[in-house]
Image 1 (cartoon, helix red, strand yellow):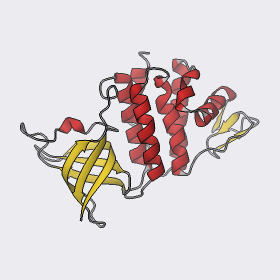
Image 2 (spheres, rainbow, N blue to C red):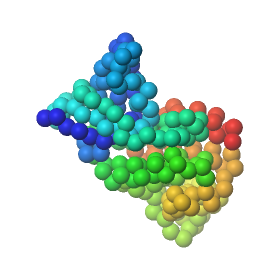
Image 3 (cartoon, rainbow, N blue to C red):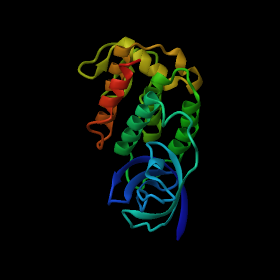
Image 4 (tube, helix red, strand yellow):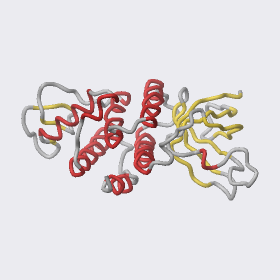
Amino acid sequence: MITKQLGFVINRIQYSESSIIVRVFTRDLGLKSFLVQGVRKKKAKTKANLFQPLSLVEITFRYKESANMHRANTCSLSTTYSSIPYDFLKSSQAIFLAELLYKSLHESDPHIDLFDWLRIHLVWFDGSDEGVSNFHLFAGWHITRFLGIMPETGSDHYFDLLNGNFTHENTGQYSVDKEYGDAVKYLLSTSFEDMHELKLNRKTRQILLDQLIMYYQLHLEGVREIKSKTVLQEVMDTL
C-alpha cells in the first residue's frame, strides 16, 4: 500500500555513494527510517540538503508494518523555512531538539499531538526574531507533556528533578534552587508569544540546558549523552 506522510526530519546518515538513510518523525506512524536513493547524483530530483534537522517533508512510500526501513518513492518539502536553515542560532537549536526527539521517541510509536504542536511552533520560531534564544528550553520542557513526563507544578519554588515536582526546600542531589526552579516553571507555563519576557544570561541558560537534559535522562531510558549540546553551547556563547 502506497502511503503519504508528513514528517519532521530527525537525522540522516550516508548509506552509499548516492543514497542516504533518513529518520523521520511522521505524524501518523511515529519514528520511521527511510532509504532515499540517488540524492547525491548531479541530476537528482531530490537533493540531500532537503533533509535538514526538523525540516517538514512530505514523503510517499510503500508501507509494511513489519519493515524496519522503507524505501522512499518521493520526497518534497511541505513547509519552507525562511530562517532556521540559515541562522546559526536557530539551526543549532533545531539540531539539538531533533536529537532530543530521536532519543526520546520509540520506533513506530505515534505522537500526533506532539507532531501538531511542533508544526505550529516551528513555524512561529522560524518567523520570529524576539526571544528565540530560549526556544530550545521552551520546546524541551513543553515536549515533556506529550511524552508523559511533565513535571507537577505548584506554589513551591525548588524543583526536584528526580521526582518531577516542586518543593518548598532543597531536597538534595537533584534539587534545583529557586532561581532556576522559577525559570523552569515559567518555561512550562508560558506561551511562545510571551517567551521573550524571560531574560536569561549565558550562565543561567547553560545551567537550565544541563538541567533539562538531566531531567530527560532521569525519566526516559533511551536518553544518554546529547552530542549536539556542545555545538549549541558554543553558539550560545557568542550571544
